[in-house]
Image (spheres, rainbow over the protein chains, first blue to last red):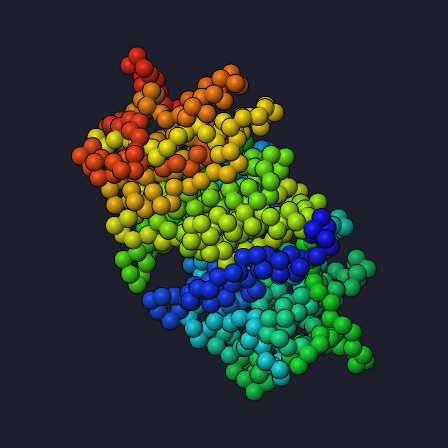
Length: 320
Length: 320
């Protein structure tokens, strides 16, 4: 049992195991530890919460120097982290950067990498204030962010309620489409993959109205399953309502692949997935939410066009 | 110029370049960004400061699975980070862990790794509240810590004054001695290398009395140079006063190497180096400070036993 590989327990097994090992303490300031996009601390001096999040990007897994230029790698490393703050309804404040540089890294590569990080940070009001540099066999980037959110804006995975509509903020599968193009050596719609955006402003606008919220880093299916597990509810997604752009569909045709799979299990779109009671939907209409399903009492389903139901399967697993 | 490798500008050149790229903003809450053991933020609601620090540990560079067991790797990854908080006179509060696991990682290895992290954290009052796990070719661990320090205890590299004594908190070279033993395949004094300690409690005791403080991560010479650069002063270190234990000396004899080099340029001893005005030394006498030199107006010197002076050379450089 103990000599088994991490791949046998998968990413979710690993995270449960870590949570069991770490969370053996009570602390009145710790509002939520492992299990959401950010750890959430209750501020001592005001009604706000402090948000903590970190993401590690590994060459070959999260980016590829053959496809992405250093500016784009730097940009992405910040965006993926801000996206976790956006999913809580918060604002990023301070950032720490750690990088392991391979021996062949040039000064100009490094400068461009940092320029990309600074551009993404400036756009979203994040201030990069420190870090660590070391040597590695491949390029590894870790970003840790400190953010903040007001009590009335704090959105968590655990607050979905039966009857809520499940909405997404925009097209899905667009990042994975670009990745598949690079993998196959073909040209096409790679712009979003190369320069993903996060929905920070939208997260702030939605926060007062939604129940649960999460960002799409591992695909819609995976994110809905996270909401379901944390909220103790079920969910169903209507296949026909999953928003996939024309350009992503064309890419699917070009490569002979199903773009719905990219939307459900690809990830890195950094759109927001949120749940909202139907009678509150009109409050956020101007943000053009795309209703893709609903929260139910139990079970996780993907509903086909003919009404047939399949079990909703999880998304990208780093260890599977 | 731009196509040159990072190794040509070295770690300090890299850090200057990063500081130039990042620090283009003023913020009344940012008390100190890059250039100390932690970034320092002024709290809005009380007189305390928030400390932010991060350290990345790379397999092969910072630890070796052939020499260290997973518990020891986990322990060390936390200790090196808490040591940065200790150097500011602060206390660690919250921690985020990011890990890239190689494919062959077992469940039991992972459990032991986290147990080591938890032991080090429990010992020093740190609470691990979140993180990120991913896949990598080698084991990479990044820790980000949030700490806190009262205004009267905040110690920085930049506050050394001419005339201050330079002191260290304990034996140096002891960690490098163990590393050299493993590298040479010989047995001997490896205990400290395998389970380093940090001087958190001592840092708290010293904080009210010292001017500048830093921890020994890259060797005494390197740390004294950091203090000198940040404070705009010079420094001289007396070779004969650098504390090296009998066991470290014996290791040097066994391997035919000079343990003074390990003390000056090896690193990872995680002792504290601090400067204090001579008339304040009696206030910290019970902590048995070891005076190794003094702060002078300019220049960096190593004083030999016969009074001859050499230039004090820097310590371990990840990029040299």
